[in-house]
Image (cartoon, rainbow, N blue to C red; front, side):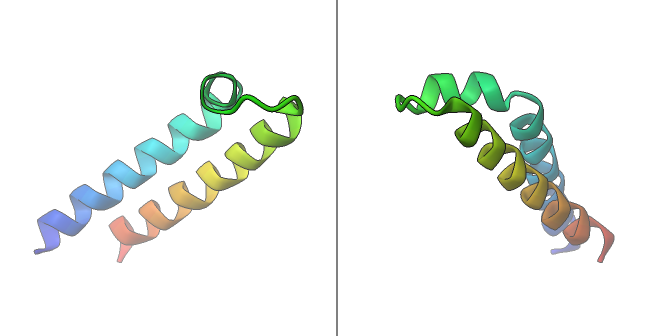
Length: 60
């Protein structure tokens, strides 16, 4: 059970880091509205939160 939780935490952390790093590319690909700066900012915040949650799952 602990192994599975660590694996989920690692996947969440990696996906969060990818969301922060590639926020501009992802918003161009996923969303079609005009204000990409606001969308990429929101994507970076969401990725940061997901990475923190994944790190906490690994830690505890």
